[in-house]
Length: 181
Image (cartoon, rainbow, N blue to C red; front, side):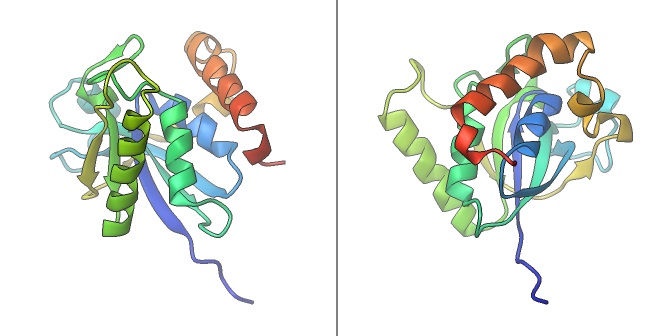
């Protein structure tokens, strides 16, 4: 039996609860883990990342099957489910830990990310230019267990009901043909 060759993407688009919930539903995605990337402190805690002293962003690390979902398509979903034009902010979540970022794992991922950003900027989808950081991946630390599958396990929690659920619903409407069955 042949094992599929999976790829990894590490993306920051604000609160990882929102991003994880979206990518969990995307066909071709095998696994999504919430965590921290892009900072200087080894194995930071949620409180340390929120303190804005570690340099980390809240991210999701996505393992996906490139035969079922291209990196290009994955990035188009990423850009559709957050505002990539606000520096260090998503909605009411403010700080560098909520920045928009792509932590690329290869030169090919970097090239695709830059091409997607240029095409989206050229299309003038947003009034302001995209400020998404494109940075080489250096580290990933999984978030604490209670953050994993947070929306799936806490759909009635106030933040989930007010912020995460509408993002997931928007994603499902926009990408109905790409949903897991």
